[in-house]
Length: 391
Image (cartoon, rainbow, N blue to C red):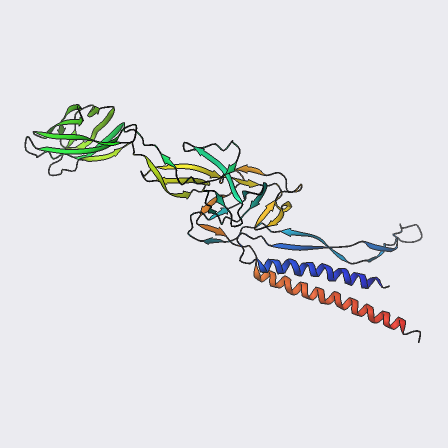
């Protein structure tokens, strides 16, 4: 039989594979973080009909004569170029800007993914649409240990943080220097004890005339007093502070200008206990809890993985990949660290399929298939002529 028949058949098979790969790329043009694939061809073995000959004194050398036996698919390569960003506004959606893969666990198997379309399940675990659990590091008292083992990343919705004891407060603003002697101004400071219970410390400013003020702090039965003096509106008293029940009140930021009564508490520490109200993700993958008392605390951090040869990863479906012998082992790290991209919250990575290129590939594959089909029909006509020699 003619060798061209089998060459044509191999061409049909190879170009059918190219059509399959191109069709899959086009089908996934809107798949989150999908990475397009490209078909690579190579020729098969060639039949040697005449070997090469070395030159001699009387004749020149000759090249080998070979007849090729067709084409085959050398490989299907995945293009891991970054896809475009699509803003969703959803706090649990994340986009990797740069290299790296999310690490997930599903059925005891570790699966890697670029798709950051996540949500929290009823158990508070961060999961993919297919139910794979996102992996990361948990936080203890707001501190994330990246050197530890990774585990299921969760949002404990019933988390309550203890309050902080108030130990300091700072007064700022102005005390009117033109206030009549005996004028009193009362400023209250809300403070918290070790149990988080709130109470009020009262500061009473009493004018002594000529711009001076007596200050008395009262916290229940405890108290403290001091005197403030001003020159040209500037405080001249050294060590202007009060201390009551372990709370240091700094008065050094006060001024004594005429006509303004703006003295108030500018800052203080301490807080009441708080319950979790909302959350957000930082560029480094940190899951930050926002509590009802205004505090923010790290609850965990997403882990990313990188590979020495991402092209060696095997697609598992559902936007996932698994490691193979040729991908290398996964190297874990926090987003933004060396070799890993940062995270963008409220956005997703779009497919990197280039439709113009894919439709061009579709035409090339179609024409290649047609040309190889023509090889078969032409070879068939030649065989028909041979059979017609004997009638």
